[in-house]
Length: 239
Length: 239
DNA sequence: TGAACACATTTGTAATATAATATTTTTATC
DNA sequence: GATAAAAATATTATATTACAAATGTGTTCA
Image (cartoon, rainbow over all chains, first blue to last red):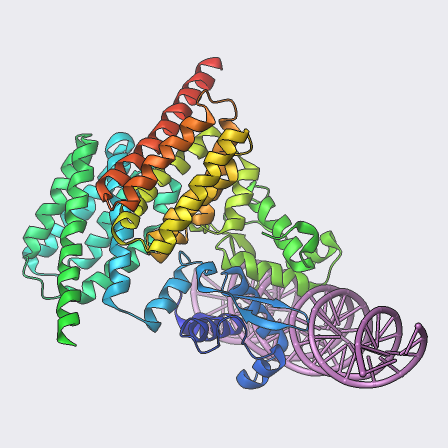
């Protein structure tokens, strides 16, 4: 996503409105001000407002009809796999419970993707996985940041699956991992341990052991899930 | 999705352009006519064209910049989980290979969703699953159409998973199933056999047997996958 | 040769007008 | 007084025109 400063007017308005809608500023079902009111509020022309409205409608957040105004669509119609929508949601309510939902999705997707990569992954795609792994090793030894190669590792596996629908989830997975990083900064595992676990996945994929790749990936995510569930129960008792 | 006739002008143009883009009418990377040319081509105002352009940009299909015009984004940026985009893709290239990709996704998502439904499904959500199942039974006995209750069954499980990201995929799964139906009209299994397999999934969910529900669902989808792979190999040898 | 500047092209934004549509109010008829 | 038809009204939908901003291209001048 481009920087805010680089966005044009209608895109900036889209951002503002999108955030407000997801934060629940406008009552669900009925709600937004009329286009004319939005023009006043932001001090812009109707053109810009309408383009923002159209973009938000394309993302499933709102719908508009003559005389009736602009209505917030029920949340189950929001396109959660749209990067912007996902980002607005996390800004609005970044919580351990959302992270758990992320991990449940990752547990569905990534082990299958790893299995497909082991079965059908092209040599080039598998080389990309290895490249990310080596960078993880490097980061572990130099005590650098392991986050970026970690993201690259998981994205490379999605690509190697050869399935467009899996690879399409790369932004989703990336977001999920970034949220994870926020909650696991001081996890006890050493960086080298993490890299080694990833290596097992890579080796299984490279040698075509689909079931093994799948199980290794599931194990990795399950560990994160266990950690998060522990945190959730801690915060529940703390209340 | 609303009928074409009910759509307003900019939405109709969005449809036309979306289909054309995905069908590859405009060369990837650089391509679309200028806004002015599109106005001429469709005989409409720039307002309508611009709104269509904004909606397509919100779906990741295009981007536009001053002086540079409108460019087709690389396909990996298209939002495949957008119902419209998915529909346009299927119109453009409905094939067994796409169906296989669908099934790989379903094999990732639905068994996990069934497991979650077994663990955390609310009584109301599970009742919805049962309702769909009974309608399947009814259709099987009266030789009616089993398709609609079949869709309802799978959707109800996604809802019962309690995870928004799973339920969000209901349109995707529905589309995948509809495509499946096109290829399996004369499958040898009787309607009652299909209903019975679904019943096993339902019973496992209702009794909280997560692993069993997961495996039953995986079995169901694997059967479809085997059928499709058979078809694919048939059509490959036929060439 | 190269750098600065002018120019042309295309999207971005604004302002205004008219049409379509759905709600509300009024009016007319029984 | 009740009900249905018609008119008024509010809001989005579409169209038109004008100008601003951005960006690539070419030309001129040092």
